[in-house]
Image 1 (spheres, rainbow, N blue to C red):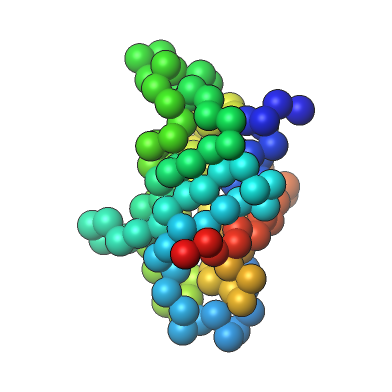
Image 2 (tube, one colour; image 1 turned 90 degrees about the vertical axis):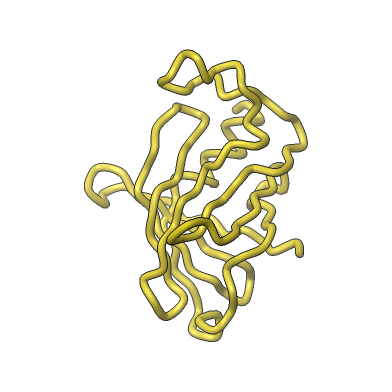
Length: 136
């Protein structure tokens, strides 16, 4: 498994659920993924929350992007998460997986551990959950 695979498989193939104490917490902040190899900053943007990759322990380029003109760009700096609030501390939106160049629907929720992300494919048949720890 490549570093990029480990980083983004957990990052972008998840759907979020969380604990009720987190409903009053703000989702904005910087988080490290569950492998510890990628940091993403979530912040307000337009009508929602955007997540930008701000650090990688082993930076790579976006080589699987379906747009060939973007394959040489670094993953650090890419907006990979777009979320809108569903109320009560839950969010839904899209997650871009640089591992395969696909964009998935996903969910997020603030928890006492950080945020829980989840994403599904095949109409919800296959889902993965990942917990990102807040670092700021």
